[in-house]
Image (tube, rainbow, N blue to C red; front, side, top):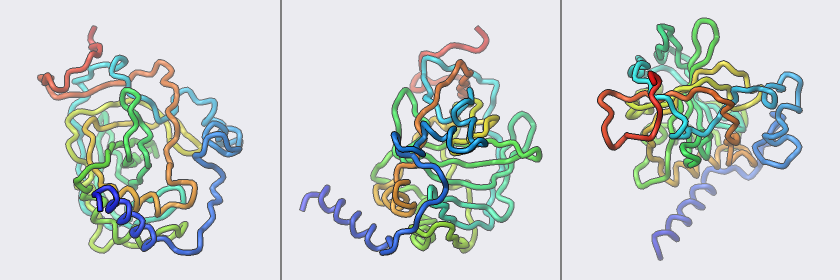
Length: 281
């Protein structure tokens, strides 16, 4: 049997082993299916408090265009201190989330500490780079004392190597497949350091939440390095959410002349050189 056929058979067996016969129903009010009454182009019309999804000028996700970036070496390396913390894996129906119930550490931006509260996945990626969409995106969501949000986004492509962070959570995700609002405590806690990867080059811009009510004022950091996730790991995440949310990525939004900054460590190596303008010009 060809390798591709064996992979397909293995994936089907995986889905059969984790998917209950009864399907739960989604009652969150929105969907990701374009052209439907509650699809992404209509989110802003579904509820008055969701109007920003349509009227906002700093919506996320966006396309990160190499020709529209500002070099920003002054941003500095990401300043964070993460640690293993008590956490649960939660099925929200539209996404699978890791919720931290203990102190998982913080990210410091402009001398302000943003504490890591939760992490969740989107398949495929929400943000694109030069119009390329990736297979998965992980969001690390942080809040500061003023309840302001900063999110780190990590992009993934399917490859031979599995993602170690997701691998450690697979047994817990299997327990909540298609069970909306079901959650399980992760034995021994969750260490965010395993997820962050190589982060010495990143994009920075102001945006919004990517689900209703699409609140703006979110500080976004997208890591430039693309990580690897296995096909079976991606299949598990897609099987775990409710029907219709296997593709839970909002379409890219207009940039609307927002500044998109790129931090890199000096000196800029030739392999990372891109045709972008200098902020000091």
